[in-house]
Image (cartoon, rainbow, N blue to C red; front, side):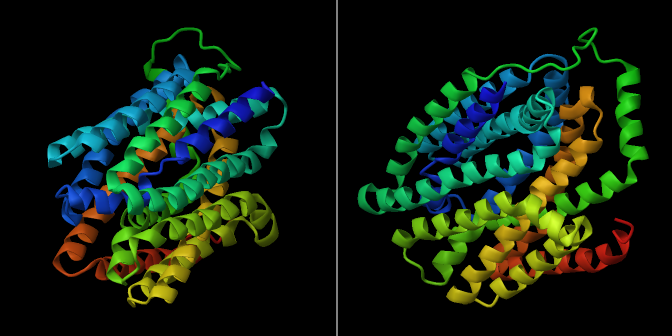
Length: 385
């Protein structure tokens, strides 16, 4: 089973090695997609996730976690292929719909497969550390792809980065196909009963502390999502040339990778509560200072935001998995993923309107206000951790 973790490392590295992401917003804009169009596509993505996340989590818990990771790899290939050929909003909508289906397939299944593999080896306490490494390798792939993708786009046109990305995604698919299924407690039957729903609902209601932790993760994750989506627009607005986008992405994901690798050590060093509160404060301050339209200050704050959110993710997911009911592990994580995508839709509509009517800098100012208000509130809300 130790090979499973190595295969997941390989899978995440090549899933991250998508050369198109570094010029994604510019390519979409060249095909007529505006900021508000992107927000509507994000809402479409979130809507599909909300509808399918729980059923896919149930499938993972009852049938196969490996199969969902494999299907996610397949939808990733189809998404990139469709976007490469897209020339209208509806083509992009189809691609994003496939991406959303893939997200729901791997969401709870991926981390549940990791946790159960470690638990079978008697090493579940290292989940945060392993998850940090997995995320770090995915980000390492993104770093390298950003550097190469920027050069490809500058030399051979934006669309070239999409064609080359298909090679990496095929390798990720091959890694997923070699994974081994892990089933610690096989279900007695494959049908979901009312008692299953009651047990999951009871878990959510009973574990108030888990709800609080995942609420912080949802708010930070939903907000930082818009930096991942629109940093290229920010870079263009502050007059950074496209050829440097790869370097920016490389450095950004280096910061994210270091945050993932150091997350467990930081949690042990400063305490769980401080990770929660400081992630809100640092991301809020970062977005505020990014609104000043400065190259150096803005890029520095991007690094702060990425590092803070990268530390928070494995720490919050680790807390949830350590408290989750084993046989519903994927479904419980999927439930929190549904809430995060609802958060993206709720936070995203005002962000899209503000950014379209004024500029992306005012959109960042709005995100700052949301995060800092919640951060101040969390100082009291999380005092018992």
